Length: 372
View (cartoon, rainbow, N blue to C red):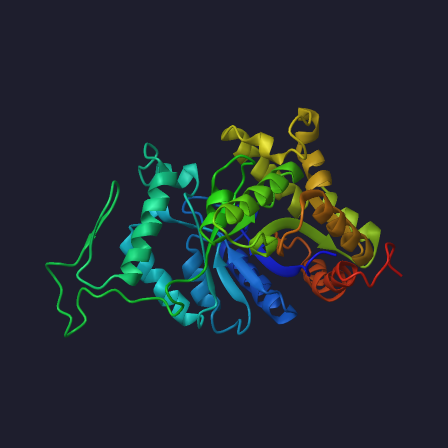
């Protein structure tokens, strides 16, 4: 019997670049508000600086915009690209947003993407090391007493010359959650060090939407090994897996909406496949390490990496996937462009109210294989 599966939401997002910007921002907001109303536990928000398809340029600003509209859901930055920020700036903004959402914040961090690095003139640095240093500095800003004297390879933070504690000058604000919001990392490689480090440090993590099953399995195992190495319980509940899921009342509608190359999922996987190919990382989309390139076309990626069908079928597919990759704690339903808003909303509703209860019953051993 596996532990119950929690349901979250993940929005990169990816929209056709010709759509009006205000419209896609409004749609993304509506999707997260709907997730909150349907009982999704978490909503992770992506961020890019120079991408007219992935148009949320500040995950923290978008989360702050949603704070009053979503009274229940826990927000996450997915991710905050720390290599793009000075740690004092990131620490201040994260602390403020943590208060705005009443402590319902997960700090998802990562190095960011190559396009953003080029835009800010930072292609030459080791952005993984830079990210780790920035995070370490942020944690020190949140825990040490001023004046701050923090210096590293990439960053320096000090308030020695400006400090006036009587009026609060030179004193950083701290998050509501102490010592800081929970930290999560995202990962796309099967052999990356991030999942192991996350486990060893008591953090959590996320497998990306577009990676294949063998990558997810390797990441979960690495995360658990990291926890074991630190003397922590070998508990997979801190690992999240993002997946493209579409649920409809009938199989024909589900397949037509989810598997069409001219639809939202087709556009998403075309974009991600193109980006990964440019980065020399197309192999992460494989379901097994020696899978042939013929299985990496956009059409085949949609067929392999999108879970679609009726509630019964989708529940079965998710259970099979969880058996294949190993137990994990949260499934992050990935938000895509609403090519048909009514069907997109219906899919989110069916996922929360029909698919998840079926998975819960199966996990508890109260429902036999083959739902009725």
